[in-house]
Image 1 (cartoon, rainbow, N blue to C red):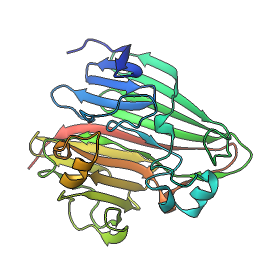
Image 2: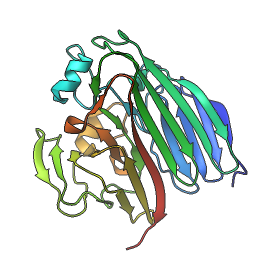
Image 3: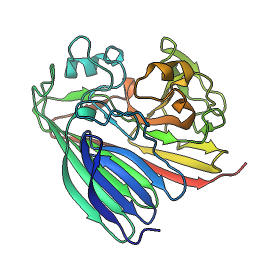
Length: 301
């Protein structure tokens, strides 16, 4: 077991970043996107990184916890207020552009039991096509008995803006066919894999084929019960009322070049989001926060 905490520079493929070690586990963090790439407590991984991830400048990294901003999912599916604020050009990719940008490390602290990193990214007018605002994003990570991320979006300009966002968490699991996801019973969701049709969840979520669902008006913690690893992973969100659950299934995994054909069995995304009617409206001079905390709890049958 590690004594104390350590933060040291690390190279992951072509990306620069840091390795963080605490008595509770170890993490890899990239400067690009201020992205937590992986986290492993003693024994089993908790935050999953694809074995075929593109660890290269300017490319999205498959896995970890990417920050999606200033829009989420397919740009055209974002509400009009987001599209008015962002005005992305035709053909814009999914999930915005900050996950491919370099952030600045502005704080680091290694204590006896926990370590913290804080990053900032400033989006000036013209940073990306169609972006006319002045925003500052700050992401704070804390690695202790639980892993927590707090993302703040501050409006430094003279006009209000509305953006969508997500902390797109990839969780490591033993077998996606055996897990159950609890905490979303009776919540309405949009099935993004099937024309965004609306449904209501009944009971726990089990994964069967491609799953891409946006759950609406969520507030309770989400838990992933994993009998194979005899553990329950708890995802506690704050400042968010949208939860996305994603697993590509067999067919889509085979089409992704940064995803092993069988990797869908080893991961599931439980994403903390602000999207659609829950999009983030920020007045001039104001700021808003979205946070998540990940913890591992004992498994009970």
